Amino acid sequence: MRRRLGVVSTAPAAAAPRFRDRTAWARNLAAPVRDYLSNETGGAIALLGATLAALIWANAAQGSYESLWTTKLSIGIGDSGIALDLRHWVNEGLMTFFFLVVGLEAKREIDMGELRERRRLTIPVVAALGGMTVPILIYLIFNAGGSGADGWGAAMSTDTAFVLGVLALIAPGGTRLRVTLLTIAVIDDVVALIVIATAYTSHIAFVPLAIAIGLFGVLFALRFAPVNMRREVTVPVGVAIWVALYKSGIDPVISGLAVGLVTNAYSPVRGDLERVTELLRSFREQPTPQLARSAQLGVMSAISANERLQYRLHPWTSYVIVPLFALANAGIHIDGRLLDDAVTSPITLGILLGYVIGKPLGIMGAAFLAARVGGLRRALSWPVALGGATVAGMGFTVSLLISSIAFHGRQLEEAKVGALATVVVAAGLGSLVFRLVRRLPGDVRARQIAATREDLLDLSEDVDPERDHIRGSDEAPVTLIEYGDYECPYCGQAEVVIRELLDSFGDDLRYVWRHLPLTDVHEHSQMAAEASEAAADQGEFWRMHDVLLDHQGDLTPTDLTRYARDLGLDVDRFWEALHERRHAARIAEDVSSADASGVAGTPSFFINGRRHQGAYDVTTLSEAVRRARGRTRVLEKASA
Image 1 (cartoon, rainbow, N blue to C red):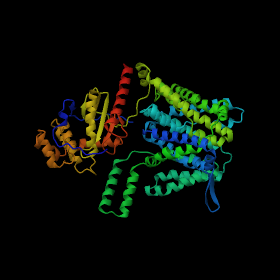
Image 2 (image 1 turned 180 degrees about the horizontal axis):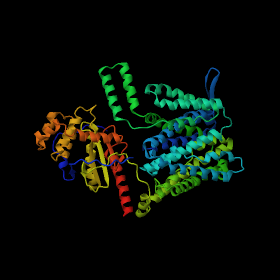
Image 3 (image 1 turned 30 degrees about the vertical axis):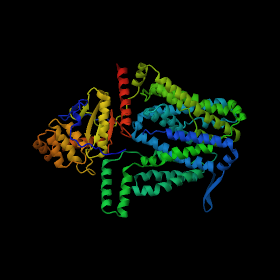
Image 4 (image 1 turned 90 degrees about the horizontal axis):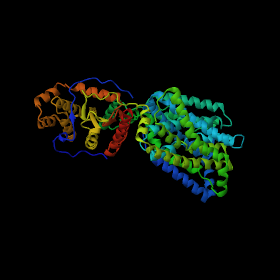
């Protein structure tokens, strides 16, 4: 919802007694402090629906179910081609895009998220390896020396889609938990795909493999090519890599993960966005095909390929590809005999117990050893980590993928029963664990949280009470910083939200405004910012701030003079400061801090030093402030 404010009065909003205003009078350089949560519930529901549909279909009309998915589809050029049934086109073709998105998400966290500090990868990597080793050992305890021993790979990899979906339901807002489990799941997938490419590949043709490696090198080099070349060449090269891997005998889905992990993510650079504005302005003046193409390429280059691909592919993988995979593979004709066999089947028991018992044991044990031996501070408290490790005991997508390679006939059906059972059992146990975590005494939870590592901060310049413009209490546990532009209509909308937040949270919230005038799109934004600082010279920053945001369409020199007069300012002194550009350097410092913090647009918010991603409506920002306040209070309680 985007709308312009309809305020017409120049009455100062800050005059209300609930706001405490303070303006910085001196400049002091603060020391720099360096430092994607999407809701997966819908995708998990779609996956669950497809799984149930497959079961119903296979039991109501097993003949038609198998007949459809075993239908052959051939694609050929001349004498060469690929012939697969529909199930394998889904498993080896479409699932490549799923693993591509998994790799893209992991790479984004490594480049821009919590894992950009490489040391923080240590515990998740070790935990992932432990979480694969113990389930395999449990599986082999049941199957060593038996006919099902070769299927040990079906008990190793956590299902990314189900895990993130269940977490969104039973532990919403757990960003650290989600990032940790996403990292573990990606490492699981990497190892699982390596296992598929080695242990479950009967023959390898080295010439096609060499071609695939060479093409991957070409794809890697394309990152340094011009944008127009990348777009034209990347897709054909990616398809060629998939075909070469298929011809080599290695499961080609590994190509998706590999491509995702080398696709860089980065925040838009303000200079690139300004260049886009110039290109669009040129196109507006001369709407020619050439200028249209230049503007299109400029927009594309401003956003990283990682985020562009995620934006395009994530809905398709979550709502189409992964549910289609479940529909093609989860169909089992369940009868009393199969259930009787599954209860005593070493394959079913090995997969089920390997996941629901082995995963939590392996993840927790390995994480504990990594933290103790390496002297590392963990990201999660032990109770929350246990809940996450329990939920990680869901093996579905990769488990079914490996089962379809390792087993056939009755054994494959028993393996599918085990994989399906892990989703139900692990989700139930995880929900129980998180309920118990919420019932822990406050002092126990406080001590656990206090032992975790600090957040990586995204804000480059910490708040300086001697310089920054601040509303609220110095003792507030939460600081909300906004980089804004007085002519930006969305900043005007956000101002209504900010006032509600200050009213709602009282002394628990401190609000800071920093300037980021987008001069390439807003003609009067720079002068308006300097006008607010000129008012600050006379102790009236916040009253001028409120008036400017209430009258964003009226920021001409005549309007600024009227506002200064209505606020009781010395107008001559006010305009002397504007004519001499006394505060241009002050505003440039804010812009520099915005650039250093990766801010390119307005409004941009930081909550206790961490960038707020997503919407900035009252509900979303209130929840983010509430979580930050809760964590701060818990840490204060623990230290006390």
